[in-house]
Image (cartoon, rainbow, N blue to C red; front, side, top):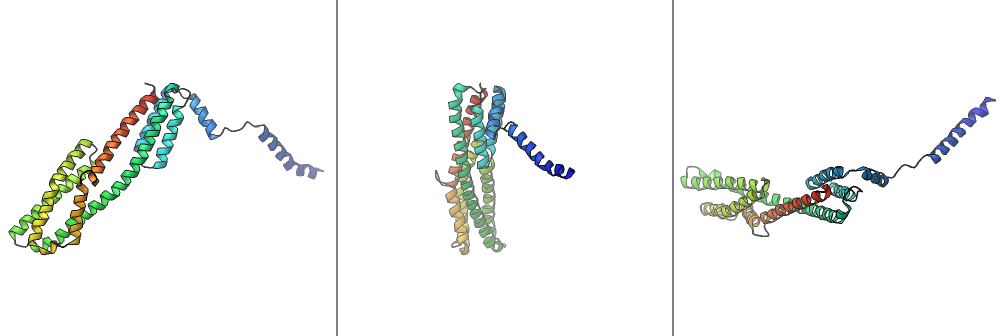
Length: 252
């Protein structure tokens, strides 16, 4: 007599679960949860979260993170506690900040590749001079002197180039550009003087490529360093845009 009862238990359990699931309140979707969270945010909390999102957007090197931060800022700009009269302006600033950051990220990646290729060519040119000239110096004081001058000048140029691409201050970068453009003609002339003494330098392809790379790097307006400075200036404009947005989102 107990077997039919035991067999009926699984069916009974299933029926009970179906009833419970049918009567249970529906779980809010992500968008509903987001709206609930936004409705609970104070103006102070909106300002705090927007500041963190703006900072992350400006610092991230990943397009998907930048897009995610921008979307979060759009939600915050339209939260109930946000200044509704300024929502349109905030959304406009967010769109400009997102687009500007993504554009700069793409341009910087491309320019870094070009910069690295040019620096590698310059380095290979210096290496060619070293491999050809160093074994020939011997006791020749004149050749040793002009070769030492070449090496010292190249080392100084390397320091200037390093400062140009690593110094965080835009004015220091501009100063490095001015110095590099002033030094380049002398560096090339040092190679010319060495070439008068050593014929093997005159038609060396590796050296010629290095000289061409240096000239391309310092070219006004369209050269690598000119476009690098332009990117730094655009980065500063983005910082200014971010400050405007933070002012809007903080309600001050």
